[in-house]
Image (cartoon, rainbow over the protein chains, first blue to last red):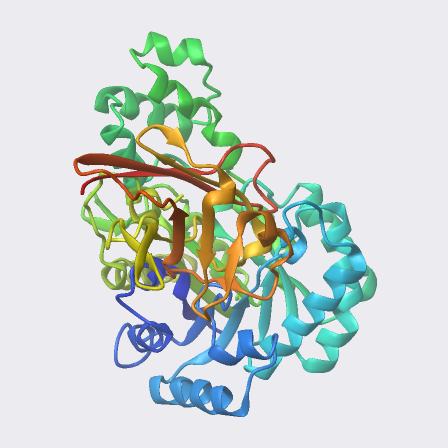
Length: 344
Length: 130
């Protein structure tokens, strides 16, 4: 039983988007020649293999040999397949459930073909519960788990999680599970958000006060922000806690038995009191639960703060390898801290 | 989304057909974090120097050489606008652009499940000289 590390190639999205890296180069950055992670998570709709498009979600023998070669050369396990939710692929309608089931099944087969253990997807509409339930026998046969992401604002105690939990418990299927994303433990502003807000004219002292009240769990109203001296940019932050929720880390215990994979979402590693952390997410208490529960699985570093520098005119380019390396160190730091506390 | 990278670094160039100037073109990256079939695009607007370009004057040229009009893309589910691909976007105009400074503005959007309908697309602009 151990907590293993993984990296989502989503972390390298900027490099891929502007043509600095291809899929192979991203994998090399994650494996033993680079960051030295145990596993890899890929969104193939972001970084497709050639045959995925040519053959409509069937990987060619040539691509499969290439893919397996990359994994073994880099000492990586194919851990999580980050799937798309296809229901809006035609902008004038939703796919019907039958259409969604067909395309999801083809996608699950592709994920299994590539050797992934977890098919990370998400529930957005009530229909999605039925769609994934219909795919469970196939996933079970292929030995892959359909993990629906518990992603802010769709927290643990919301129907998005509870309806699927009902399916998990009713079917008892090993193919039904979750991928908790740690941004459900959001505390305050990330450094990346803060810098973006400052570029759009926010006052630093007002941001400090807003951040402080978010961390204290206060509900701010536009009037409160005005009293603090904030203008329209700062007032826009009052709705932030609705989108970046704080679930009690104890609730993780309710879904951990059905979770093999976790998204270690983070925005920007930041030095606070001599420790390199993600100040926007309560990693300390979340990691403590994983240690207490003796959880066995992979945590995937999912760096997202680069997106805060995508505004027009901004010329800052972050280094995702540096960010992910520091994030993985932080995971081990909090894991060891929790173990020391437990063993004392 | 992705505003600073939406318009390709090559900027606006002359579009030639059969060796003659037939308009101008630029590359456009997808306003999302994944590739999408063209059928998923719900907003595609181009403005030049403050004037909306009529959608019938716009053509999209795929890496495969296939050409689509905006009125056709709803049924194009087999071609993916890949993440990072600079989709060739052509504006047909026989007279081309006059010498001087210009501003290209674009607004593009794709339909995704977790975004509310009708929130608009991603916008970007480019100032350039001819």
